[in-house]
Image (cartoon, rainbow, N blue to C red; front, side, top):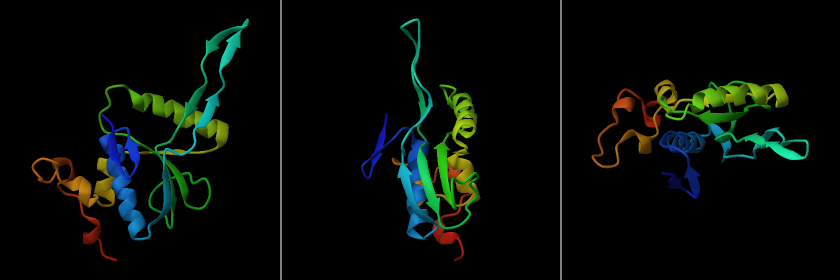
Amino acid sequence: MKIECDGHKFDSNEEYEFYLWLVEAKSVGLVHSFTHHPDSFVLSDKVAHNGKHLLRKHFYTADFKVKTTEDIGLRGGVDDFTYFVDVKGGFNLYNNHREFSINQKWLFQKFNIFINKVEPTKWFHKHWCPKKALLTEKTKQIRKKYLHCKLLEDIPK
């Protein structure tokens, strides 16, 4: 099930929640701009052998490209404060963490671009939780995983 918001389709709830964080960070000037699903990187072209198709092209698309106005704890900036982010949840049924690790190394080796893996639960505990992600849809209760998170308004300016 894809989540839609502001014309974007998110692959997971975690990706959507990190988007909410970026929107709040942009509203206070911490993030200058961000792009959801920026252009893909071709890691391997398709391969033919003896005139027959052997391997498909392999590409990688980050979840976000983020331009910040200051250091927010991401690593490997493409230039001053421009970073790529892949959002991962804590549990993954399809072993995407392993695939991400391989793509991360491959992308760095081929393009010298580091992809940051962000797990929203950890990120929100370190920074703040977006207001829209804090409460459950049905009961409007605080989500247990975000119980001890600050909100942006709780952080001294």
